[in-house]
Length: 217
Image (cartoon, rainbow, N blue to C red; front, side, top):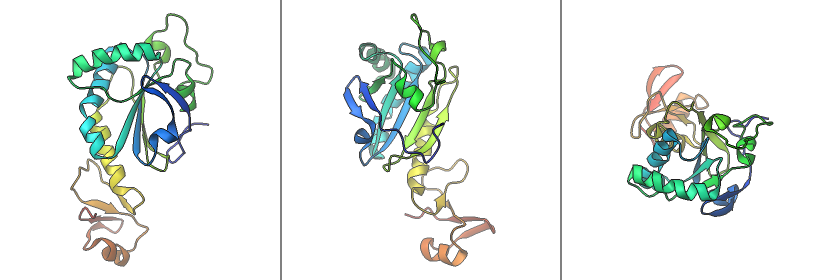
């Protein structure tokens, strides 16, 4: 069965370049991001891991842990981090799962169940292992995105989406298109106008079903 938004992330036992973890224990009470790649020492992936490293302070501000996934082993991950840090000019302090047996990729529905990696594997053999998962402290998947190998992911957008998820988490709120921190948010229709005004103050009612509030805290 495919992994979907609001599913609980499987509590997988994973081996990384920084040791072994059960995913739920690693997440703890934090937000978490898992981001996967088809192979170490590949050009687009190196720039993406570098982008994640450069954003380390931003993840920390948001109480968010990040963990990479790649289908090579621990030794390769440790060597690859040297390249990542040289390109990014930042420390890659996050762990990378060594998913050389594809257990994580299959459990998170990133590859066909019968997929395998032949000897002399290439990135094309694991091309669909290229996803981002944002996970809330309740261990449930809040967002998923998957890119092709030819297009580098925009981690500024991952950060923006994380901000939106944290702003609306367990609240009757949503964010409009292109929302940024500090901008007005949308009040859910589960509240009538009176309830929404009592909770969030004066509303900016564009349409009966589109009501904005001033970025309530």
